[in-house]
Structures are given as C-alpha cells and as structure tokens.
Image (cartoon, rainbow, N blue to C red; front, side):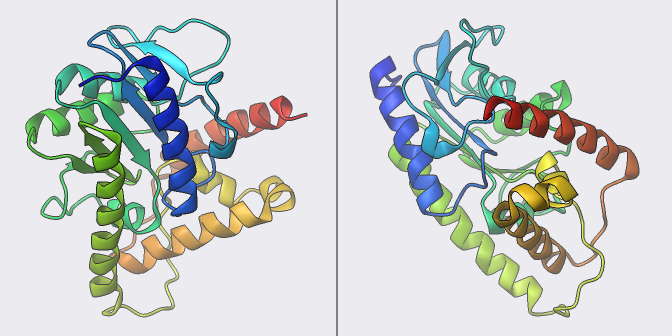
Length: 259
C-alpha cells in the first residue's frame, strides 16, 4: 500500500536518523524513498546530511520519466528507485545503504548465494539502473540485494520491514566477512576501491584537511573490503579517474552550498 505524502515524509526522515544511529549509512551517501502512488515516489535530496533532511527538502519524483519540480535536486540514484517501483508493484519503501560489512561483501560481486547481486556500473548511469532493474525483476521474491562494489539495496512493502532487513543483512554480511577474513593475513597491501566517489573522498588531501573523521571512516571501510576479498583487485584506471572527476565536482558543489 502506497503512503500519503505526509506519511512518506515522516518515515523517510525517521529512516535517515535511524540509519545514522545504527551506523548503516556513510555520510550523505545512499538514499531512501517511499512510493506515493503508481505514478510518483518521494526521495531524499542529493548531498544533504541525513540529520538535516526535513519535510521541506524531500523531493517528489515521477516514476515514468524521473521529472520533478522545484529547486531541490533529488538523489542521483532516482532512476534506480523509479525502475524498482515500476518493476515491482509490491515495493513501497526502498533503502540504498553503504553499511560497512554489506558494502565490503559487495566489492567482489560474486556472492549471489548470499544475496542477488546487480552487476557493476558507475554510479548514476543508465547502465547501473539497467543492472539493478534486471536483478530486482529476476528475483521477484527477494527483497535484499547487493550492488557490486556499491553497497546494499533493500526493497520492501513498508518501512518497518525494510529497516529490519537492513539490520539482518549487516549481521549476515559480518558473519560472512569474518569467515573469509580469518583465513587471510591482517596485513593487506592491495586495497580495492569501492565503487563510488566516497573512495575518492577518502584519498583526497582537501578532504583529509576538512573532514578527517569522514576520511577515517572511508579508509576503514576500504580496509574491510580488502581484508574480506580472497583476491583483492583495485578498480581499473578509467573507473577511478572518472570517479575522481565526479568526486571533485560534487564535493566542490557541496562545500559551496554550505558557505
């Protein structure tokens, strides 16, 4: 059952705060949405910290073409959410998280027995939307997914179930991580990049100076991923370069908006 606008606003704000409290989200990355009807959904804004999200900066987006009104830009992954709502009529609430252990497990993209995995693609691209739509449509009875090198995706009929599944997923991912990590040396030299500009944020001199706490968190997450993988491999040069450009643009824009 779809939510009213007021219900959706309240639940998305609540979800954001709880994800931060439970440490299932990293900085402003990830996104939350709720279905309003067969034509529209409500989603978190782009680049706004979860503790600053309020009923005035959430964005109503059309499922058919991802259009929206107003000056507030919705999450860059709005097309992923739209594709899911269009494909799965049973889904009314979506969480895309960068929770530590599920993200670490998602790096190699091979644990389809753990959770269905959407193939790798750069963030915000048509290919990523296509890959997610395919896996969500293929596994119609599933509600927990991994996005290769990009964290977790939880789809559900309601907020309560989605949040519970996010917690269960992290617990299962930690157990899987522990099982693999115990067979590896703690001294891992090759660190794979997680697939989003968060990693570029973690390696930027400017970021280290301006937000050392966030940088430490990103570096720890990256180390988790490296220790988890049986054969750690960094992302290709082209992908890292493109993400670096994306990072520079988004980080600069965020800083300008906060002045």
